[in-house]
Length: 356
Image (cartoon, rainbow, N blue to C red; front, side, top):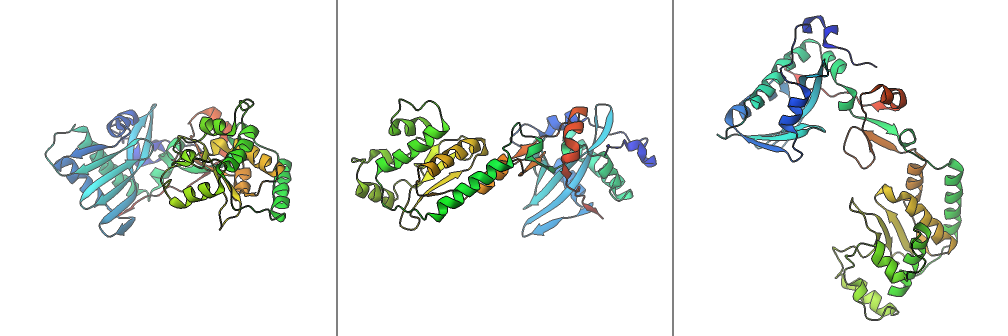
């Protein structure tokens, strides 16, 4: 579907947005949110919200999803969605992917453009009402809309279905063996982590299990490496039961700056087996190689996320388009992206405030 120009609507031929897209981006987008304490700006935002019914209201919070801002971009007229939340009399304005504003009363001087910005939104809201929202549906660019696309259409590489079936069958066979283990020593734990490291990484040949752990794991081991006797099951059990490691990451055997990497949880009385987990899917391939190694070595373990991770590697999980998510894809308004991706994206219906 091609975004239509404003001129499709006869009554908007002479409508001229006062701001360019890039001016709006500058005013709202420093990455941290701008605080505006100014009575005039607060009053004009309040006036805008009074033009429509809240989309939801709970306690001292009201929200409007969405108002739209007219703008000029690359010689065309477009409209930009933005959300307003009112909380205890202050307004929080979110221009998704561009930035946000926190607006409260006060006498602090601000650029006059901020008041003009919301005056434009008021002017445009009356036009939205006169077309029952059609003007919005025709003029919001697709790089400012939200959608979903299967990973297989945007990933560089996926695994074949037969590989997925083969690994799931091997794992099912493994579960049927009912392997269990309860008490382990620290050395036992490190030996199992070494199996994982050797499967996932090449530079392990001359390293001892402890050296591998120090190389790839989160260094917040919570006192685990301070145990005196690495061969003592009793000491390892006492350390675990002490809870001194709470808040640390002794079991994050592959560290990640984003969320967490790969965890290997040791067995205990309630779960007499190791548990392998991955949080950041950038490590999904490493996780699969580790899973295969644990299966081949007949280690008592569970990998409850295995099917979901394989689903991701097959390209069957959805990526969110133009929004914040671990699996996300940014749609660029170009001929190349339109030809490659547009037909595979399921776009969400635009939300529009109900005007009074």
